[in-house]
Image (cartoon, rainbow, N blue to C red):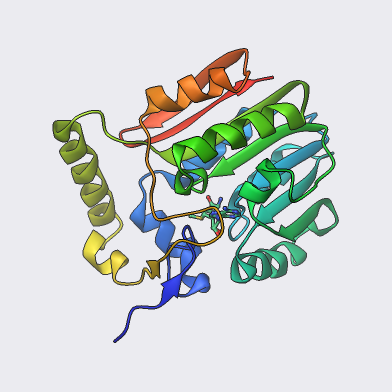
Length: 238
Ligand SMILES: C[S@@+](CC[C@H](N)C(=O)[O-])C[C@H]1O[C@@H](n2cnc3c(N)ncnc32)[C@H](O)[C@@H]1O
């Protein structure tokens, strides 16, 4: 059967497969998103979720921040539609706005959203940008945040050595086995992504490179609140 072509970051050929299968493909997905949510003040009023996908991170933030409005951006009409119908069925429907658009365009001011966010968050999406575009996006995020605002991003990071690469891979294999499957079976459900908009298939950078880029973008304090082998939550305070 011919592999279905998808946008970078959609991962699975069928959008409805995402929520169950990402939890098999990646170790500790829920814990990772919860680390982001815990890094956002429960008093936050406006939150931007970049590359919201099916809305799993948005849901954790809406739960933690009872007064927050979440603006969620994703360039995939399939993902936005899926998230929209999921969120509509929850008590959070009035506090979530999904927008179809490319966060690279937002970084370039070609897509305009009102600034003044208390938090900007993202998970498993920004690693599709080149390092130059990541830097531009980090600077735009910094500019859009209120004083004291935070940015947290969860992404896979480039292993610093071939030996670590092997370790990170074996951890993912072990995780899949614990979920009663294996990576080959889960990967059989993925689509083949080709460049779209500002994104491309994986453009991983090391954690150190990310932290340098955040400092260059003007984040006064950078931090790594969570890391599990090849996955990390990192960001900073405006
Ligand atoms: C792997 S999914 C993660 C979704 C969600 N954040 C989560 O953790 O479950 C990555 C999402 O980023 C979106 N994405 C990738 N590049 C993008 C871009 N340049 N602009 C907007 N969305 C993008 C994809 O469409 C996809 O929905």
